[in-house]
Image (cartoon, rainbow, N blue to C red; front, side, top):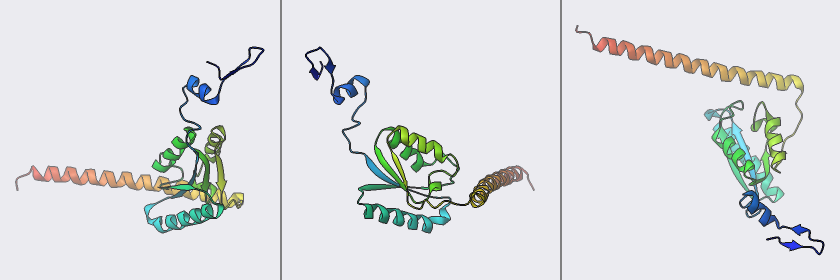
Length: 179
């Protein structure tokens, strides 16, 4: 049943009726949140993460935002981080008004534009506290260091796994021998 019908027969429906018809639940029912997102690459950077969280919180308090902070410990080129996935889910559920980050590369080292495009599509603004432009060479060096770090960690992990497997096999072979 239309919310309003004009004398000319034009039918107008409320946003609530349209949402019901489209199967969209509660887009406007919940106020959107401001999310502070913080990330460091490794667990030994916990102090850096705490400082980053404090800086982002101070900024959002100064702006008068009601906010929640999501933090991650993981590589900027790992897209499968718990906090990042939580943030993307919230954005695609129309739950986020604004994402506040200290630096652009805190969300993703590569592919920031993808998240930015997603935010635009779902009506979310990304607010970068320190948006100082880096010179191209500096950014390339940082990207290269990040890539080398990730690959060296993977290589170390494979070596460690291989060594553990060899030790296990040696122990199994040793236990079967009478001496």
